[in-house]
Length: 277
Image (cartoon, rainbow, N blue to C red; front, side, top):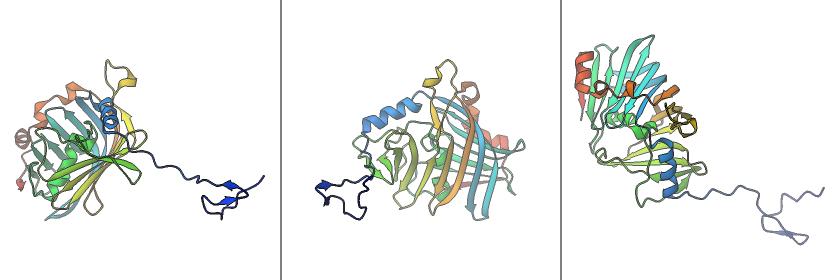
């Protein structure tokens, strides 16, 4: 068998033949319409979610560095908010949440126990506020990642990146959000937040898993990331979640008390309260 001379430059002739490159061709950038349709099919009908798994939470404040690991119980109700509880052996250690306007983090096992909270609509976000955006449905991959009208899709680092539309009433001043999708399958792989101040953070998604939905054929079940890792400025992992199960459970998720910071404050009675401005 004749073997082509590997030292011959691409396009040069040998014995009258022209060699061609065997390198894979970079995929073409998908259209905005294709990304939108894929995302609507993925989670466009999802309105409630109750998911369980394992979470690791890291943060730094004036008291030093903190780390919590335990069982994660995540609930989301469209129009109400996100609530995530981290427990160890049934004992709750932390509670994170957002109602689309405010975000909060109850640190129940610190000494003293405390509530850290703030508003999402700010042009000069603190580190805690930036990290709190992980509680937004887009950053959890449970709401459609829809491109902004007129945005340009770019292929970078093997993914198709495009600026995302922020939900009406939830748009945050000074924040630009972009999503990274597999250029062929259009599966979401990452969401990045870019702030006017030059800071950035991101959430990377793993493989997609089905969300069990009663009364719906399995082939039409929503799909969300089984694993997500939130990375803040400097490459430090702030939150890592690996899900074991996910159900579209309205009974478990459609509970206003889960997304009421003031009610949760009365329930948990933190010893200190700190507002991040």
